[in-house]
Image (cartoon, rainbow, N blue to C red; front, side, top):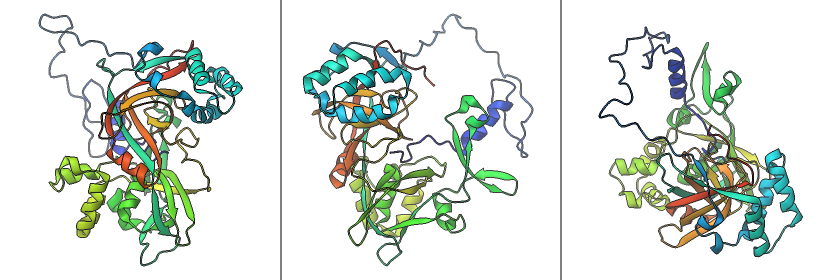
Length: 413
C-alpha cells in the first residue's frame, strides 16, 4: 500500500539540488531572480583543523544493520513463525527472481503451504541471519506506528449524500524522474505543471480543490464523508461501499508532490485539541463539531493523493512490493535500510499498552512517513477495528532484518 508511501520530493528539494550543483564553495549560494547562481562568496572563516585541543572528533555513525544471533532476538521463541508463512510465500513470488533470494525461496517452497511451527522455526534459523537495525547514534529503539485499509461509503455518481470526489490522476500533472538524467538520484521523483515554457510546482491541496476541473482530474467515485476520504488518502488504499451494497477497491496512483502535514498536529498547534486527544477519533469528533472550519483543517495538509480503481479481490491491498499485504504480518519500512520483501522480526508493544507484540513480519510496503533506520508501520488489516488499533499505535520497538545466510546487507543508499 503506497498511500503517501512512495518517495516524492517537492520542488523545494529540486531547488536545493540545483543550488548545490551551482555551488562553488561549501556554502550554498542564493539564487538570483532569473534563477541563475549568484556569485560565490568567500568563506567567512577557515574551518578549524581536526585534532586541535578542545575539539573532540564526532564518533562515527553506527552501521544500520549489525549481525547478531537468534538468542539476541527479543521474543523470537514466543512467536509462531508458521503464522507468517503465507506472507513469506507472497514475498517470495517477487524475491525469487533475485539471485540472492532464489535459493532460500526455493527451499521454502519445498515445505509447502502450511509447515508446522517447529518446521518453520527451524527453516528460519537454518537459512537466515538476524541483523539488528541500529540508529546512527548506536541506539536500537525506534517508532512503530500502524495503518489499515479503510471502508468508506459512497457512490459512482454525485448525490445529496455523496459530494466529495475521489480523484484519479490529473491530466495536467507532470512526473519528473530525476534518475533518468542523474542515475545517483534514481529514487527521486518530482511533480509539476507546465506553464508556458516553465515547470512549476503542482497545485497544493487547497489550490487543487479550486482547480480540479481545470486540471482535468477524473472523478472515480464520490464519498459521503470528507474526513473518511482524508484518511483514505493517508492510508493510500481502501474500499468504497456503493448504495447497492457492492464494494469498489481503490489504490494509490499518484500524489501532488507536496509533503504530508499532520492535521492532528495542526489542531494541537491551534490549541483546538490536546496532544493526547489528537487521534483519528478525536479529529473526527472535532470535524463534526466544527463543520465551518472543515476546509481550513483539511487544507493544513498540502499533500493530495490520487487513486486508481483496482480489480475486486479477497486479499489485502497491494503494497510497494507489488504483492497483497497480510493483516498483522506486513509492515512498511524505509527501503534504504530494509530490503523490500525481507522477513523482519518486530519487537514492540500493543497500542497504548505494555503488552508485548513480538512477531515475524514481512517488509512489503513503504511510506512517506517511514524515514529512518528503526522505523516501521504495522498493517492491521481491513475495517473499523483495524482502524482503531492503527489510529492508537505509536509505540517504541526494535527490529531485526533476516537475510539469507552468507549475504551481507546492501549498502545504505
